[in-house]
Amino acid sequence: MESEDHLDENSPLIAKHPSPPAAGNFNNHNRVLLTAYIVLICIMFGDYMQQSPKIQIYESILCSDYYSKIDTHLMQGRDCKVKAVQKELATLRGVERLTELLPTVLAIPYGIAAKKYGHRTILTLGCLGFGFAQTWTLFVCWFPETFPIRLVWAQWAWQLIGGGSTVISTMFFLVLADMTPAESRTIVFFRIHAALMVAGILGPTTASFLMGYNVWLPWVLGVVLIFIAVPLTLLLPNRKDEPDLQDNLNDDREIMIREDSNTAAVHKGIAMKERVFAALQNLKITRSLLAANVQVLLLLIMAGLSNLGNESFALLLLIYVPERYHWTFAKAGYLWSLSAGVQLVLLSILLPFLSHLLLKHLHISSHDKDRALMLFSCAVMTTGALCLGLAPEIGPAIIGIILMSFGAGLLSLVRSLITLHVLSDNISVVYSVMSMVNTITAALAGPLFNETYSAGLQLGNMWSGLPFLIAAGLVALDFVLALFIRENYATSMIGQSENHDD
Image 1: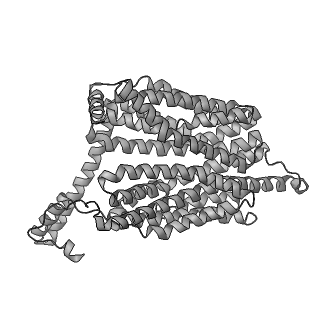
Image 2: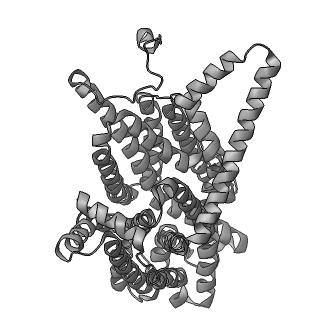
Image 3: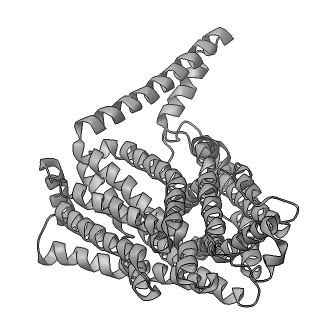
């Protein structure tokens, strides 16, 4: 290993990228890749398994608190679907969702740390912190007489260890990118996406089945699975960022001027000023880009609105269905699996088929193809949200859930259109802005849908679906904005190039 790192006068200035695994290392590479899949499944399967039992236990604790304050004699035949309990449950979940996003402020510092200590190191820390956060929530609910239920909101503090789910996701894909040859990377990412969908189907289904025996069982098993993933991450490669040509030149220059410490200090001061100047330039580029390109600005607004619409489903489905249609939380968990199954079919079969049909048989451009699919997704998702929000019985509500799940590809289509409207030099900047928009809207979703759900309960049971009606309005606005997205000369050239490559 030391001989490989040794440099002499015949060594190249720029380090070569890792080559694809040789035939002798093929089996080892596959074992490492399998380990990465197992890590992902443990985390996601464990997380999905917790959702239904967690909400049922939340409701049970809040229900006990409510009746203990009114009259302990009413505890025997208590009705946990009363407005006061359901309103507090929505508040608990909404604020919990907001606090889960607080650790994302550490995404950049942990990204910098990953360059020095390696992507796997930060991934391991992130999984550990995530496991501690889930354990804290479980611990608070296990002793409801000792701890107030709102202490679950403090779980975000544990996720400061590793930066939370955003950092975990980023580091996981970076680890995969580090150990996968470029020609195989797309296939690996497709498999990862499929694994996520399978976890989304099987996790809630398994939880619903186990809740028939004990409501705590799937929650405890979910936490255990997350902790199993922690030592497994140590089996993954830990690549640190290699210095590029500019870093090598800077090192050579620093050696040449190291005649005295004052000169070196001046050199470092200049380097710091250059970094600050570069950051300010990036901000200026972003502002100028969005001001000059109205199409991109519209697409970013659409990304935020569609993300808000999706959050209503994630936040309230397991609260809304048991309250309005008097289903158990275990049965409602199966609806979550149904949604994940529809999304799997949509993303793996239906959207690729429609995309191929529009490009190859109707001969429309890549831009118009994405725009048509986006309009279709908005229309179906809006219809689904309306069905779910207004359905008086569970049958039409299930149809609404299926139709809402057809909007799963909306954010990907928006991202694809953004790529067509932006020069390659600026894509990373716009993608960063889009990630920021999604984070902000996800943070706003908790308070927004919590308040609208509480307001709906006050107006009467038929209005408890108000958050989904709001979501329908947001996605309908997306549909209107999509009508103003137009193909210009630049996007036409990019689209023609992509069609030619296909």
